[in-house]
Image 1 (cartoon, rainbow, N blue to C red):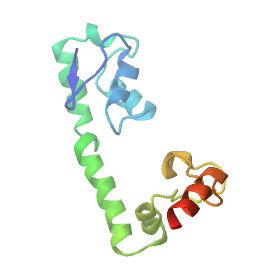
Image 2: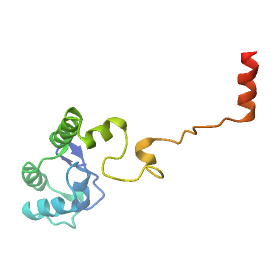
Image 3: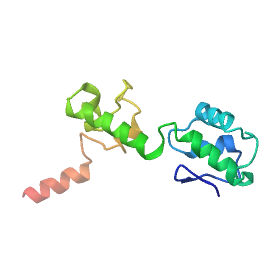
Image 4: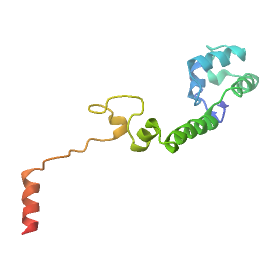
Amino acid sequence: MPRIAGIDIPDQKKVLFSLQYVYGVGPKVASNVVREANVDPDKRARDLSADEVNRIQRVLERYTTEGSLRRVVNENVDRLKRIHAYRGMRHIAGLPARGQRTRSNARTKRGAKRTVGSMTKEMAAKIDASKK
């Protein structure tokens, strides 16, 4: 299993798709890296020679990936929070920051549903019984 940019890329997939397991490498960057490194994009990752892996790593060093990219993104979000920008406040509140509706949907960001409002007759009876 080849290790590129600190990540073990899947060896059964083609190089073009295996490279996309690295944070910050999408389809466009992966195709550019493969082209610049002179590696066959249809080759499986397990068939890469040590020289080809080194060439890919050298080309990938020019791009911001993995830890440094995560740090940059976190710093940007922290800056928005610090200056109390609208997007920063949405991050703090755990709500969508890019204008999506929240009346329906937004379950990924807001979490599981919690019913608010009236209670069942059994719950009301328990509360009344405890008050007496």
